Image (cartoon, rainbow, N blue to C red; front, side, top):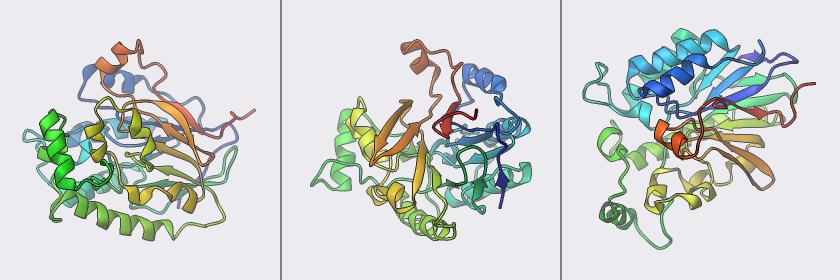
Length: 285
């Protein structure tokens, strides 16, 4: 178990780096901690190619005291021109071993405990996928997918994210839910958590999506009470590319996406505030 966090350190977070884009790669190259004690939580979608993922995580591990990563959907894609052609669970396990080699913590490792300002808190990276349950009431998965195809709003996961050896992505999600719950039971229940997941743990953040059909690829209703059940001080997520702070049941949720260059241009953002402090609420004095 990693334990640490200096008095001047902070828990910083980012997601959806998408370093295949030159603009994003340049932003990542410039990322620096504010103090030697800063930890960095990465909530997925570093990139699609194994070499790009390793490049970014290695760079950031050299700069931050501790780096914690959990996969997004893009890391789990198998692009036809990636030399690494592993699929599904095998691809995920390969990335976990790569992270261990360079010293980055993953959902498969013992949870780290932050003991810096505001601590202690247990840092719990989660990998639970989605199960198409963020869909309209009284509709089946098949009906929701048909609605998305008819609207022309279909996640690329349907073609690039292979669930092998599971029969479907929702079956893989069910397996990950069971495994993650077992892992969460190993933590000290007296210590609050910072939960880090690529997808939002609650459905409400998807209510503002421009295309509501996309919500079914954004999480699972099975995690709707995890922020309460696992005593979260803060929940960190990405995926939606809508960085903001919201509160549910009095608990702070931080969407920390860098997102695509075209999105930042549309909102007049330049990426200079790419990393966000997610814990504690108040900076160290």
